Image 1 (spheres, rainbow, N blue to C red):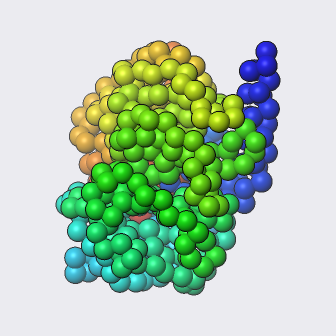
Image 2: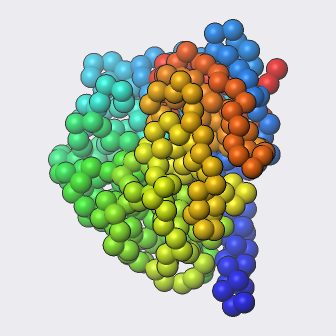
Amino acid sequence: MAKRFALTRWLMILTASLAANPGMGDDWPQFRGPHLGGMSSKSKLPDKFDGESGSNIAWKTPIPGRSVSGAIVLGDQVITTTSDGLEQRRIRLLSYDAKSGKLRWEQQLVARGRPYCHPTSANAAPTPASDGKHVVAFFSSNDIACTDLQGNLLWYRSLASDFPKAGNDVGMSASPAIVDGIVVVQVECQGDSFALGMNVADGTTAWKQERPRKANWASPTPVILPSGKSAVVMQSSENLVAVNPADGKELWKIDMGCSTTPSSTVANGRLIVPSGGLTALDLSSAGAPSKLWFENKLNTTACSPLVDNDKVYIVNRTILVCGDLFTGKVLWQLRIPDANQIWSSPVISGNRLYLFSMDGSCAVVSLEAEEGKIESINKLGDEVLGSPAIAGNAMYVRGAQNLWKIEAK
């Protein structure tokens, strides 16, 4: 009874905290959405769309250069990044009108760090983040810039200038998070490997923490503690660490090997951690969270896990797997037909799951019945590696060459 009361109290604190966050509402202000959950329960998206015929495509806007990041949505703006020019050293932050797809503003800079990355990736790999007042764009070259909502440059930093050994040959892709006025980035590689907290107002360093000297592409995960205070959880192949966003002070650490591509997610008082399977940790008690369960059959390869209606969803290569949130028991699995590599984390709208393959095909999976059912396979005709954004009744997809708005006509 006491544990149930503690969980109920924690959920009440979490709900109040999220409601007070200015970047929530119908916006999609960061990687995987307002709560990093990758879902929008109120949106209604079409089951079918087609990039060639234009069916249920509200608009398509070509963007110069290449990007594998996701877009974010702030009110009537859709904001994304791109990199082009010699060695992809020209880095851009662009805003488009959500209704028309027309360019509203652009901020352009030159990368000072190493822009080199795998051919399938791009210098514009991390998804931008916003707190409702600022927009922060981070790039594989470890250049970071902050603008206001009108595109005016507020500050810029070349982290590669301060830490010249930061970077790896396949590129960096961890997305930034903004928590309580602090921008948190994970820059983890075999050389200069660290996490950094910067004041969103001016870009000055609030704290720096040394990290394992191993390549890591997972993004930091903000969480709300039972006390109502914020924390940032960072995973690596060696451990899982929670820090105070204000000063970087370590709150707790668990020695466990975590995945280095998919990121963790939070749901129902649980931290769901990709870890050669999935590990569920209890966040409702003070101190380091205890392990609730581990299931190696829920092994996600590249996509971050999703939680909806007490079920957890992962993607293992081209297989969608559903498990029970409370026990980890596998409930069903579904092979995605004709799918090639899948890098884009899926999203859920209502009772539909949308999963993009790298070639731009999207499987729409119904979650209404006891087992998932494929409703349709749709093709954009553009590479998709970044996770989609959902706002209102529209889905915004950042293809490698284009920005798309998918909406029922």
